[in-house]
Length: 22
Image (cartoon, rainbow, N blue to C red; front, side, top):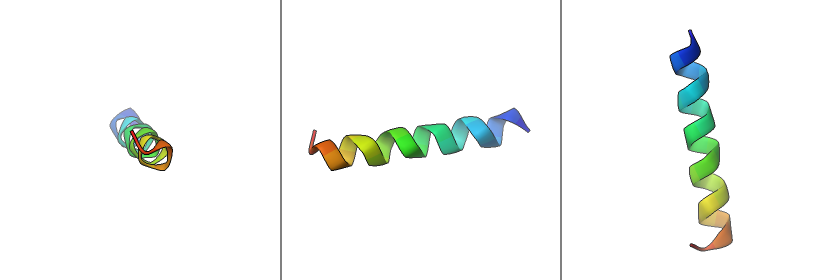
């Protein structure tokens, strides 16, 4: 299921953005 992998990728991106404080 590629959709699951894509969702995880998006979540990771959001977490990284939150860590940057943007």
